[in-house]
Image 1 (cartoon, one colour):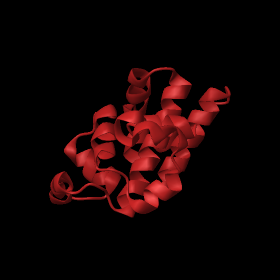
Image 2 (tube, one colour; image 1 turned 180 degrees about the vertical axis):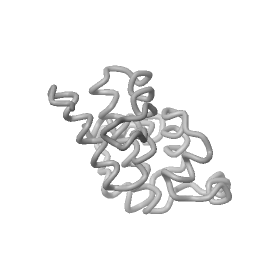
Image 3 (spheres, one colour; image 1 turned 120 degrees about the vertical axis):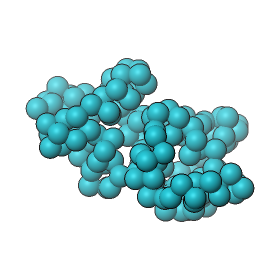
Length: 141
């Protein structure tokens, strides 16, 4: 799964040849390259409002990222959370198109909210992760 997360964050395009041996903990603590944000946001087809909510940053902060090589630690951590869930959804649902569609679909298990709506918190992300594992192992309710 670690390789899938790094690939979702941009893989070789962002991290170069060392992408196979990336230590995500070190990268998050150091701050992910700013390019990773755009790659994940584009993969999830996020609107600016969704980016604000999921990454917990303002539009002005995101605009300043154009002039910075790396994100801060907290934003990097939230971005890895999104990449981890997207990678898992792609694995379970077998395509990025299906994964993104599922992440946007309201779910009864989430009180009628979509997985993407609740992924902005660790608790919400854990619920979405559990739903995906339940689907994978055939115990989805």
